[in-house]
Length: 145
Image (cartoon, rainbow, N blue to C red; front, side):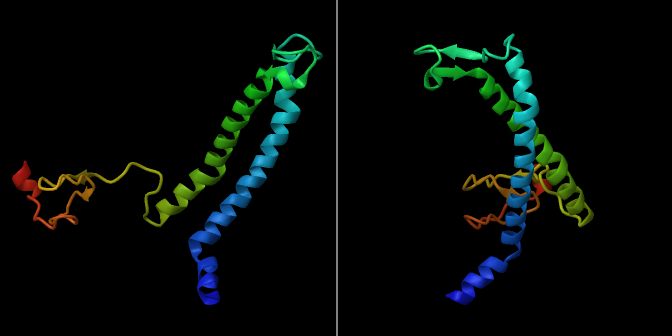
């Protein structure tokens, strides 16, 4: 059991995923600081003064528990978009280029598929000669045209 667990941990995909999560956490911390220290003051200033927050008070005046804080929500949306842009620019785009050099296509258009006329499964590779589900022989592309 311990040997199987060790193999599981040393599997390449697990290491790549763990590294990606650590990098994402580091980016998240940076972007959270950017949003808190730079974006939030700008959004709060949009309300006209520093003492009034962008939102609506539903209950007793001055109660933070009944205040709908639209400024914090807008900041969270801005944070999300900035985070996704940073992840795309620094993780996804370089990974796509590295995989393209290896001859692999990732995060691109899916490969074209064909449908089996007998069982109607639609995820068969375009050049398949036999259906992987019902094992029927598929008509050739020349006969279909």
